[in-house]
Amino acid sequence: MGPLMRIVSVARFTRTMSTLLSSGVPILVAFDIAAETCGNTLISKAVFVARDSIKEGNTIAQPLEASGEFPLMVTQMIEVGEESGTITEMLDKVKAYGIDAIELTTGGWGGCFFVPSAEELINDEKKLEAFKAEIDKRGLEISALNCSGNPLIDTPMGHAHSKTIHDTAILAGKLGVKTIVTMSGLPAGAPGDKTPNWITSTISWPEYDGVNYMVEAVNYQWEVAAKWWKEFAQFAKDQGVEKIAIEEFPCQLVYNVRSLKKLCEVVGPELSKMIGMNLDPSHLMIQGAEPIAAARELGDKIFYVHGKDARIERGLADVDGLLENLPVDQSKDRTWNYVGVGCGKDLQWWKEFFS
Image 1 (cartoon, one colour):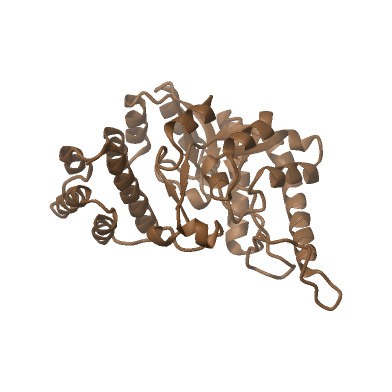
Image 2: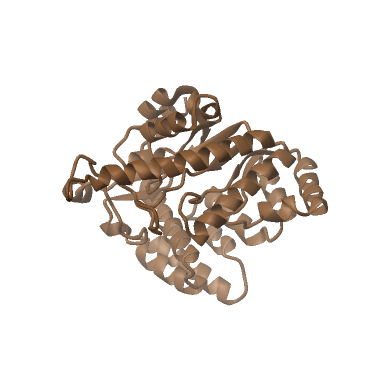
């Protein structure tokens, strides 16, 4: 199998597995589906062997590595996931791979897989001190705390996400972490509505009974955002947080450079110094933007970076454009897909991006 085709097939397998498992699909069923959809006979064979290994109570990583079809980094990260049942085991693995800084999720959509939640740590001093000790004795640095979610929607989920983000700011202060990675959130389109409304069309029309309801919806959303973000930015500042890096995720109020500038504008000149972007190039790619141009425009407003790739699917995007709402596991029908680094943009592009 050619190296490029192997990378594409492995990326399709890992993406499919991630989607299925996060959706609650049983692991053996997920392996069957991923094996059938990865698009390569040799990869499929290796996946079926790994599935049988699980049935017998063995590991996933070992048979995948033995197949010779999976890159070492992929099997190593699978091994981390399999063996890191505790914070200490996870940190030992991280250190063994030569990694010296880690970004930890504290709740929200990212969950807490290896570490206690922010709420748990800020309310248990002994647990917090033990957690800090495990980090410090391995010489590791926490580069950021991640608490992505939607704190702007007036629902139980939104209230929970808002609390988690505030708890994360408190935890950052206790840990001496200066950067929080999160999302802007997305309000509904009107008071009393409970569904987030991502407005991606022009607000010039339509009108009804002399009222342009799109303008009213957008104005309402920014009023909600201004109130919440002014409060939270000040709260985070009071805890010692210096940077709030907002990921420009689709279906959020901040999803590109212009909307980040708008958020900075509504929170005011002083607090906006704390607000910048977690630049994830894949999210800009799928909107048709050029991340390198965006990076130059952002300048010192780039507070953090996630190195992720996306591929615009030739033929499909030519017909249907880039607005895409099919589930991510329907990759063959989607106009774009998140892919492993190098499977969307080529090596030369990534060299330029990181330089």
